[in-house]
Length: 594
Image (tube, rainbow, N blue to C red; front, side):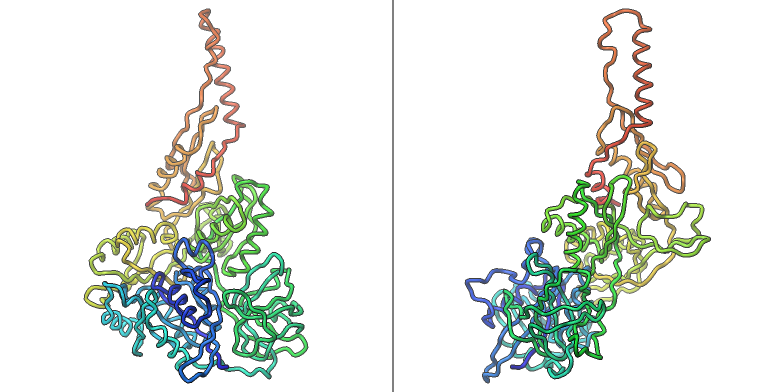
């Protein structure tokens, strides 16, 4: 049987998961009894949000009109900009891609980005215009946009994933246009690990694409980068469930179970080869991904630290773009400094840790990596608490992104205004057609990691789409804003902001914390400090015990003595008392408004 490996790429919400459902139904991979919407989005979080977070692999059997039989390996990919790394891994395991565009929304920012990724991976692209059944569908205009913006001249397949039309044409195009995988089963084994997940009973299960040779149970295998050796216990391919098989040959996609308990032996992008006959051509792997957004993750109960450590290690197996390392905070105790690809990635990781591992977590304000030049040299700093003293800093450089926005022309004014507020510099403004414009801005990454996506959706009534790519560091007029509670710096509240926004933010944070931190028996000053100067202050009044209630008349000096003693006690309390900062205070920093 011939093999075809393909993936589906699209902007978020263009019907990619529904299209995958229809293909599974059409090829009878899944029975109607087992069928449910978004079958490949098995994670509760994916179904709730209506987005794909993880790439999935599934095998379909297909016979064309002539009776020729094919194995089709579909690798479903995410559509959001934060999960581009998942997309690039899926592309490395395929020879072709279905490029899906919504007929009612047209080409959008992530469509553009994913098309360039697919072209860069030299895949055969089959264009598909989906949702043609909608009353708002504009097929002709969508085709013009695909030709102009994506440089695709092939005639697109018209489909409606909801109604199931166009599936036959799509499968025929996959079989005819996507080239079969190259590689010989007689060569030494060379298989690419493009995904993995943890099973509590069977250890690490790895998902592979075999490029050369064959793999079967009982074979001794070696991980090329770590050198770790294992014996294969079971291999198979993924349908809706895992189906064991005798061997996987060149061109096939499947899973390997080898009793791997040490999760550090597995590296996504690594090559598996046979121990006694290793390959001389390991796969180049993937470009090492760098996290762009950092935040501290801390357990609410410090006794949960070990559980958090195990949970992060297991989650890292299925999400290799998550980076982590231990960190200690004066205010929050022991936790982890984690690196993410964006703010949605951060949100998803936190939710997965809480749901899948039953943890209760606190998260500090997200920030980016700054390049700080001092007299001692240049250092990269991912935590504002580690910034050198103000007087030592010569220059601070911050990461910038080139953002692409595609939106209806009627929202141009508010969207351009939003980008200007975020310190953006316009690079391009072009009309895709009479109603749609494409805008490119260079914007500091720190400006888009908190609240930018929500603000964009709000000013464009949900019609603007957004994508970005990193373009390096540029100098910025930045300062460190510290919060002092009862004269002590709370490191978890330290943030780096632009000089012009420091004053406004300082007032916002001090006022917000005043309403959240409960009153104590002593007065608590909350101060904001920038460049060693206090720029904002709020006081939380002390709770007062009525110490003179027991005095019935008598000499005034007795009452004064009691009040003086109370005053002295409060002074001592303020000096040695510990202020309890509730978890909501850390959430308030995450919800900073402009």
